[in-house]
Image (cartoon, rainbow over all chains, first blue to last red; front, side, top):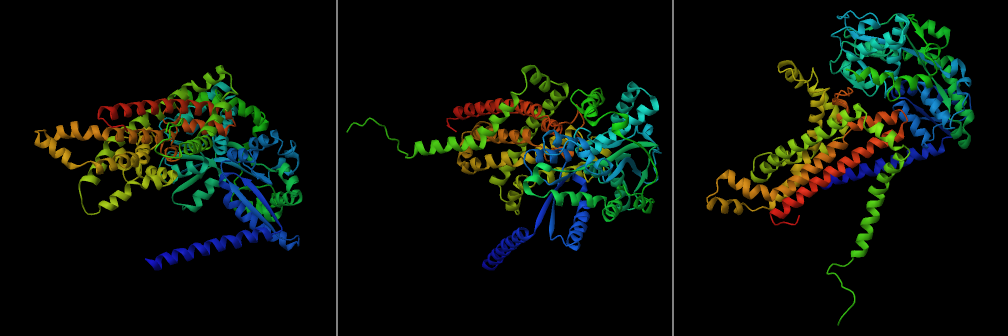
Length: 338
Length: 279
């Protein structure tokens, strides 16, 4: 008993010592940046940060450490607005950065600060079906068929779900030409949804682990990752005839960087996302890079697909948010009469 | 020797009361008053519109209904568990006793995920319940109930157990020697003594269930009008940066919970008085 106790005690002391040296190391490092990001970008930024830190060292600028914070993107934006000291934000939908701009943390013209409207990569919404596509799901109109189960994350709480919903809406609007028909279509589609998970990963778990649903509607990178990681014998990826452009926006949180004196580092960091190295890492994570050469190099991952932009076809994000997702908006009507 | 001040037998009343009030203010009252203050950003008409939306009302019914049901189920089976643990001895009793507290210690998300895995269509239990009996547990209101029963289990056991331990078996022997049937001695001797503690356990389990979010969210399925709990509606509002709307719903939960707990407390006092006990 005594020996055990001594062992535990020595472990505690060692852990305390370790954490002390760890925080000391942080204090010695020349600069740190905090990147506040959305939920499922962990793996991507782990690679990006390692490459950026090495690059920063190689170009003799000193040492830099990038710290990461991940979570539901709206929650992350709220955390920054209430004081989380983020130097940069990397989100998956622009309303979250607009919210920060409204609160004076990010420049209002943040879209003009970096190329491609400050979106270093893009993805789109596609389908993941069970191997061999037993229900023969080819396009959006198949999802509204009777007796089918569709897994989509909740559009009210998840950026992924929001894009899926808008993709379905945009498809219906283009094929039918009227909002009434589009409303009827998404109503039929959401009548087939047995579970509304809070976020993209939750929906993935429901589809892959719980055996729910005939089709998962999610981002391309998530779908390819699943099809590859969980074995090719379980799932197939299906590309609809038309989908949505889901570009991931980035911005510098100027209110924080000007206070901490990290403007330059933050700019370099976001520029790195557009560099050849950064773009290559992005492509390796099944996200569509902006650089044409690298997109070409990885074209076997990224079949051509017709996409539309929210801003071009449905109006500004602000209006779309009000019209579709606000209380009493179209999405509420979609789920109301079921 | 007349003094103008009456000294209590116990010293330190002023100090301890002051401490209690400060502590309660910091921990409970100030955060809760923030809810009231934030809600005043809405006019009454807006407030009413938010809290009386049909989708909200459906969520109140599920949240409070399932919580009351879970509390009741836990009261019955928790009493049984406590009874077995106090009155009988069997191998592995200590292990069972320790197991009771697990739902306290387990992170709620872990509980939710494991319950979902077990009760889902392809889970250990789910495949039989859904496949053979056609009853859908995970991703429906029944799943909510299962999760709430799980997290509320320790409360009744832990409140009833000490009372049972203090209760002498002589009481029941006396009842038996006076000609009471086994059922009668339970109904008229044991139960009245346990009732206040049982009600406390029920109230705690209920209160815990009303506020529960982490475990329910995984198993509920979260379909509007069917399996959305009220805490989810609050989170949904927050995700849309609608702070005032979120606090409006929080206020409803607070007030309803407070009234229900007050009623349960009243019942407890009544039950205590009937058996001649103060508490």
